[in-house]
Length: 212
Image 1: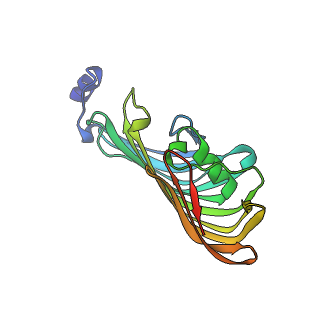
Image 2: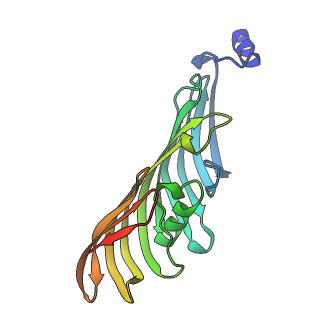
Image 3: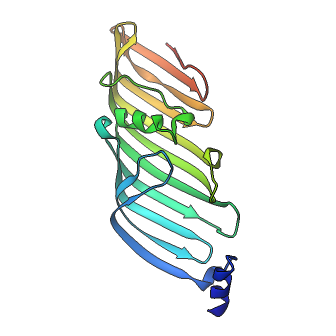
């Protein structure tokens, strides 16, 4: 209606029920964080109203180059109130694939502050299934402090060459948590030819440590 157009011209909030757009996307590429690889092959549906936005993706992937590709599913984006400045928003998604790709993702500028651990190329193998939650504050001048990332993951069939000196850690299974404090992992596998339990910790700032 006319009042909505007046509000738009004045860059003022409009009534939530003044606008509603339902849409579907297929095989598109989406940027979500500066410095992070785009979401590719995204298919899903969403709705935009005067003050909110929601989108649910059925499928997609993150291409991490030589490190591999992470399959994306169960993705949800929500911005509950554009009237707030900055506007809060959240992204939740599930990613699965080679652990080398997950490590590469966490090493990117947008995410490395949340616990990324550099892995020697070719030295680590395995699979990971993770759930990521990203909280955002949307504004024109939003910086890194406008982003909060949390991840919970399970790594399976894990092997790490030269884990302890020349010894290989293999047949590993780890539970991993990454958030603003850093990265923590615990689980079990084989080391020195025998069963072993392991705990890894890497703070957001500083070196990591492993406890056997």
